[in-house]
Image (cartoon, rainbow, N blue to C red):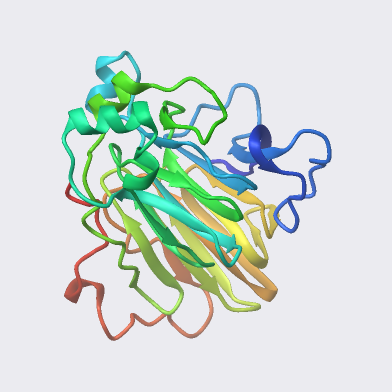
Length: 308
C-alpha cells in the first residue's frame, strides 16, 4: 500500500498571513495564505475520508457552523463535517470561540445573526500551544487572530457562516440555524496517555487523533489501517522511503511501514478514521518495549465526541 509524502495546496484567505515559517517555505508575500491543505500526490489518487490542514490567522475567521452527516446527505453531500484543532502557536491574547455561553432558542439565534449580537453569545476562551479542541458538527465556533493550528476533519468544505466581522461576505442564516446546536459545548477534551510514545488527543465516531513522541535514533513499525495521516511537528524521520520534517505530512494507505527516527527525535500528529485507537498501531523495533502508562486507558474515559 502507498506511503506518500503529501502534496501541499495553498489556499488564499483574507484573514491569512504572509509568513508561513517554520511550517512551510512557500512564498506568501503576495496574497495572504490562510490554509495549507495536504493532499495525496497524483491526479488519479482517491480522495481520503479525512482532510488535514494547517491554518494561519492574522484576523478572526467568521463565526460558523458545519452540518452533521444526516443534514449533509439530505442536501446531496456525502457527509457532514466534524473537526479537531491542535494549536501549534498562539499569540498571548489569542482566543477561540466554541459553543455558546448559554442555551438559546432557534428564534433567538436567528435574531442574534441578524443584529450581530451572536459575537457576544459565543463562548470565547484563550488558547496556547499544545491545546486540543474537538468541534463536533453543529457546534457554533470561530478561530481568532494570531493562531497557527493543525486541523483534521471529515472531508467536506461545507460551512454555514453566521457572522463575518464586517467583511460583508454572504451569511447562511437559514441553514446555519437549522444545523446549529445553540448551547454550550458540554464536554472538553481529556487526552489519554496510552504508552510512553502515544497520547490519544481525540477519539470520536469519525476519527482518532494522536500525538506521538519518538526518541532519537529509534526504529518503529507503523501498522496502519487503510488511511493514516502523519504530520511532523518537530524533529526528523524516514517514514517508508520518504523523509519528513516539521510541517510535512505523510499519507499511509495501510499495511506495515517503517519509521526510522533521526537525531532530533520526532514529534508528530497521527490521524486515522476510526472510533477508537488502534492498539497495535505503533510497535518498537528496538530492544526495549514501549511500556503502557501506569494509569491505563481502560481506567479512564476515552476522549469522545461531546453529547450535544
